Length: 609
Image (cartoon, rainbow, N blue to C red; front, side):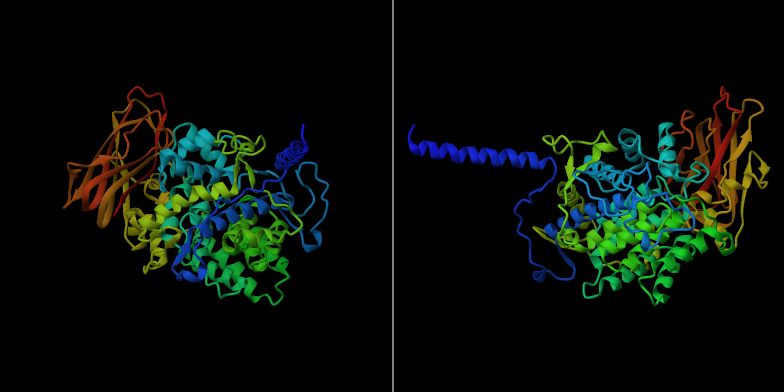
């Protein structure tokens, strides 16, 4: 063998050794390469334009920011749910808790990053949007996706909604208080922020996309809290970059609040924390505001007209998320520290604001805050959602990367953008003009409440009457028209909404439910929401016009047929065109052979356009 051959062989062996070492190293640290992309320089873009590849970088940072903050916040989750709470002095403390994966209060890093409920349900939503090639999921798509992929690592309202889906109940009924007693808990606040990121700079579209996912598990002010977080993520692209980070946060919070009713407890929470932050001369003393949160919404909540609903409730955890965002003043590390130490369900709000800062700052700025850490890009969704696809078939410990997750979001963003009136030209996205309408009128929950005749007539000082099979409404019967299922004022409820129940002493052919108003109302559709003990097999509708009950016009359709096997059906009876009416009447045929002791009804309402 000649000497040149020996030299080639030696060089080859070195390359092979390096290759083997690289493969071995990839088991512990992922350095996901980014394909070459020509990004349009920022100076070549107008204020209404955005670079596609820059936004992918920011989406990647969003996932990473959420995950770092989630796992760091988990070190204290549920440990301090009452006074005394943590302070800055506790950072770095070994809590000596055997039930914590990481019990030292410090930043947590993993390779691969493990899924948790602050990211994995959003991951499922991304999968469903991609699978169905849509940005507006239907109730059936959401329920089918949950039943296929979300079967463990869920709690409180998420768990209750999932159980309801198992017996055929669909969103949004899965979030109604008469059906899901946990509807005012935190769940939707940690599962729907992704919809804001999918509609950058387009808050109206973000709220539309997030509406049904939010109302899968949340109602009332808890739904508003989830909307608020969605809005922060969407509005992040409208922030004035000449403002300081602290000023950017204040602008984001104030702008998002414009879409939330001021009657909502969520508005009270956010305004209280914002005011307390602004009034505090010592911005390092975040604990002062946290203790005032405890006083107002937990310890003495009743003195302020509120109810404290346990450590996983929406309100105190919304308050600590806003607290961390404000006092962190744009510093990712400081924001995550404050969120982690704030108490109650401390990983959730921390994850949300961590993801928001990633979206605002981008990947390089985020990882630069941890110069001594090798930051993995890999993600193990199979920890909690083992039915998800595996995008890394050669990697035994991970199934995806943040870079790829961000990449799968881009086509959805582009479709939203184009449908909203924007434009896509290669790497350049042109955002549509901001809406000129009052932001509150663009909130789908506000729109729904305004469409409800049961709500609107009472708000105008009018009267709504109800009767069942000729019996004039008594107090228990009035729950049929109390508007609870369409109440998104966000006020603090004093008790859970209820269903009307009627005992069946003997088999009935049917019951008649009539709702009348002391004025004409526009009726575009009639919404009938059954209770849990349903045995209805057919529905017929009449409208009160000029003093006479008249059958619904030809062309009226039902969103679904009544099915005695499915409880809590929400059936929309859609008219071919709106009619002015002073009442609606429903003849419901009851299954004659039913063994059920009663029928039940949640709501019968006339909805305008």
